[in-house]
Image (tube, rainbow, N blue to C red):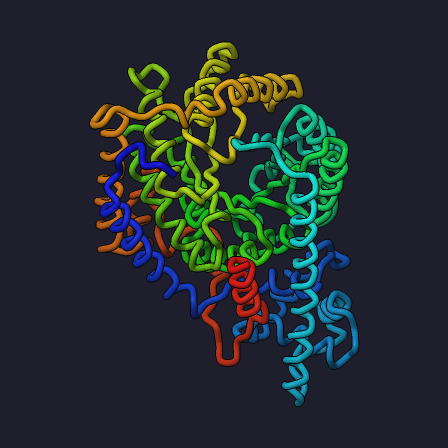
Length: 521
């Protein structure tokens, strides 16, 4: 991408080196540890699903049982494989019977056979993800997509069956990506709900059944429209690795997956989050999913002018943590937002500087560009104008994933008519300004260039400070979004444990190797 902002490559390089060092220290913490959510994800990938007679998800039941027995430090894969090997049962039935106390989970004498059983179950789990990835590639090759920016529309009724109607309508109106917002508070649940759901609040629960229903609906709609419709959900919160696993198996295309969002905005323990995010990203890398990070949310609690550099610094760190998990730049959708006070003079210039800067620094990454929300007042006509300027900034700066702004933002969950207006506005602007960004340049040393350079300098200064103290201490000091979190506080801290002797996750190595093969291909 052409360097229209004349950014200093030495500073960009220093930022990446600093972020790589910061991420490496996080990985030093992650490597010898696992969590209850990681082990539940392993079980799901090996074929354990469903709930017991009390409605408790079987992965939770089995992990809790292993933890009480003091054997979870070896991982959940070998105990499950031992039960499958000893009793000749399918993985789900073995987990159910173990939960009832009818069969044992301790390994028999032939540990080699148990490890081979675990490896076989892991191969079956990987094959399911392989099939989903190949099907995505086949459909994309046959149907294609709209030119970017891709229009990202939200459905969030709480009822998956109503969501299906709204998603089909949005796709028919021109949306390219459908995001099913999760029910309020699901990120704080330490289990994944089961089955189709109809009673979410402010969103719809993320479950395997809901993923499958929406995927089937969008595939049908895509065939009718002659273009592939992408599906998004949220691999975040206390079940981050499990939801990533379900998403990879059910052919979701995009996963909201940030290394720090849950820490800052949901008060989830940072130690738990860093371990969980790594494995969830390993799964997404193997499954060919694009992740979206959440830096755009920082500007809902901090000023978009004063705190712009914190967004950029976080993007550098999130990029390095994603690369450490095997994701390639084309899968790392960094978060950005159009959130400056509309009353600020030259605010559009500063927004354009920031949007263009992110594209130039991360040219291969499909940046997730968020619409204005903080300063939406309920005046739908003013809001529609703000969204129109956001649409202009997006197409001028060459964005990839464009979240639709709604004129009724801050009033109610969007109606079909609201979404229609938003899509119509965005398509009109994108069509009429399609190549404007290629035709313009910025005045050397002008306001836009100087703004971008200043944000880059401040981001490097912040990364230097974080490098001195480490990312956990930086979060404790509130260096992002103005929110302070303690490494010892937050939800889920007790779900982190050190890997014991003989620990084995049969997915880590083949997923990393497989992701490397896909990247090379």
